Length: 329
Image (tube, rainbow, N blue to C red):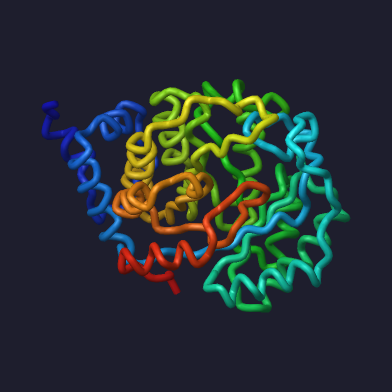
């Protein structure tokens, strides 16, 4: 493949300020690069912005599991799907803080809390804010994912000391309707805007392996990279198939396509932390190592991501030791 000098210059990593006008054609050209060339560019971008041997460690806890009224086709917590996940009440503050202490002792620097809601009620939000305040007091960064937010709710979370809010776009605007029908893409963008306006860092990425096309992966990254401000944290999830959800039985994604997605996200959002997120339980050590080389520099520690499996902490520690990598401080 021969590229013009102008295209070559546009796609080359540099120390210039991150761009927010990525076109799909440019993202598509990156995705189509020969694998060694793409990996080199992603690795160079990584080195210009981060220590390539450091990985940010987070722990994710489901503080309110199951019973969600949404119909996200990938999610075992949707009340309408028979997945064996029972609806539970919001966790008690003391229980959450005990989990946070254990996470910090295990090496996590960020503690993330997820609740299976379409949108939190104000009374529930007050309890979550108390959790945020308690976790912050332990010296951990805080992140929550609670569904859609109003501007007032985002402001309340900010006043509690919240550092990050997670709200993924999931996929491209075109494919979104095949995955979720109970809220719109615009709803998600509006929540992101409310979070950003409140002064909270944004954690926003997506899921691959849901039956989407390459063009959908390109569209998702182009959308994220064209936001007025790039998400500070970009989780890239591999679909974890759960029996009872509509996406159970979906053809599995080629690992090289997953690594390409990580690499393109790194190049397009050079200063963002790119998290190798859900799906690692089914990834080989070699695939995960390629993802780190492609620019991933964050993982979740712990045996569970909300309700789905995740590698045990000792297994992750052994892999990081093998690769000569260390937790980001």
